[in-house]
Amino acid sequence: MRNVIPVTERELNGYFYSPIAYGVLTIFLLVCGIFFLATSFTPGGEASIRELQRLMPIILVVFLPIVTMRLLSEEYRSGTIETLMTAPISEGEIILGKYVGAFVFYLAMLGGTLLYVALMAIFGNVDVGLLVAQYLGLVLLGGLYLAVGLFFSVCTKNQILAAVAAVAVLVIFTFLADWLATRCEGVLKLLLHHLSISEHFSVFSRGLIDIDPLIFFITTSGLFLFFAAKVLESRRWR
Amino acid sequence: MLAAIPFQAAGTVQEAKMMIEVKDLTKRYGPVLAVDGISFNVDEGEIVGFLGPNGAGKTSTIRILTCYHPATSGMAAVGGYDVFTQSMEVRRLIGYLPESAPLYPEMRVREYLKFRGKLHGLDRGERDAAIERVVKRCWLAEFIDRPIGHLSKGMRQRVGLADALLCDPKVLVLDEPTIGLDPAQIRETRNLIRELGKRHTILLSSHILSEVEQTCTKIIIIAAGKLIAQGTPAELREQVSAESRLIAELRGPADQLRHAVQQVEGVGQVDMVPVDGWHRLSISRVGGRDVREALARLAGERGWGLRELRREVGSLEDYFVKVVAQQTDAEARTR
Image (cartoon, each protein chain N blue to C red):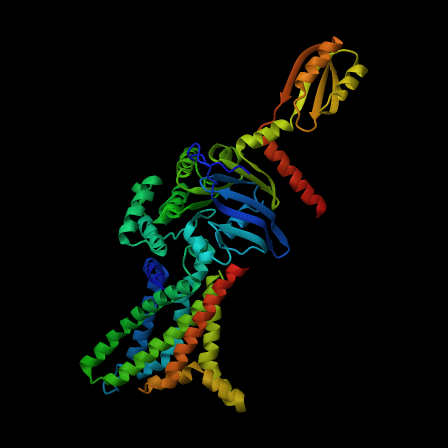
């Protein structure tokens, strides 16, 4: 697993050399700022990011696939995948290294929003417990989105395709699964309900840290990373 | 199979160690047969040139050896490790420069080499020493802090080569190392490869014969996925001269001449054209036997005039073009 660190370092360097990353960071903070100002940052209002939190899945569904789309697609396109896969490093290490790189970048994005929290803390009383649960929810949600995005980046050398596929899948499981569940009966309803990302995410928004959603996010993220490693490995068997 | 290491001490009866072993290797991409039952060996310390026209299957074979692609059938081993089942060990042994040297354009040369050093598990001290060594070797000192995206094709090729050399690998695999370089850089790279051959076993591919002829101790020619010839440049040249025709100019009665010459042992087909009172004979030979002396004796015995007798030795280049053309023709006919 020692090879994870150099890959992560390279990925992070790659982000900070790339104009797309700065664009994503800027627009993400801008969008969050506008929503924050419009919904939460009002005199007499509740000193929490509850409203922003509600909108966050929509924002992240768009932004995080842009963060992950280049991870492997770019290596395929430029041919550098050949030097990477002929070096003594396993597919699991490549995937994990890239995932951690993207994750750290996401933490930086999220770190920017702490500014709003700081502003709130100056003008009001912030419920720290609630805030911790909400941010934990965001970290886990982002982690899953990044894993799904990475999975699609492993599947194609076309970055745009990777991003679009990730957005499509994430939209279905975040927003449509709930709605579909209300129209179904029996086992299907239960299944859709359990697969709904927003259902699990909403627990954190209420300030709860429950074991169920925790396990949901960690295992599904892990599953997508595992599949990503397998797809990468399959290139060696073809 | 030639098994002598150039620097092997005189008198030691030591079997050269086999570094690369390829047996009945076949690679199919869907319906396309890229490599068709190739077998060859590379001994330790050899510089082997993998020669073939574009699309002959050189890169496919190399990608199998470097564990990037699996073979469809057959086996390949590097340093005794199987490329399929012991991929990690093989990858530790090989320094690989892929065709067109893919690199990360946003990284600086030093950064890139550091990253590659870490992947190969070199610690900080080893890494710094290794970077210093390869940078000197590949004339990169001036460019070490430049972003790779700003470098010319030739310099990027050198960065790729530096990367391949970084962990001082036992085996160097270079896919078209001089493609896209200018003549001065080609010469520099050739010299470098010869120099490197003293420490490493090298397999390099090229579609240019003169390139391989000058640097390699052994040449393997492939075309349309099949191995068609292998040996030292001298052995191949020998093969060329063995297949060459004899030109003789004799004066004598035409019918007797042809008949008598055809009776000489080792003579195959004889073509005869009259040239201002003489006869020019173009003689193909069977069994690679040198019949010049017998022809001279024949002329003497019969009292015929003999004014020219020579071998028409084609160049290795002609030979290469010829065998490749034959192979591709045969391939086209079977399809």
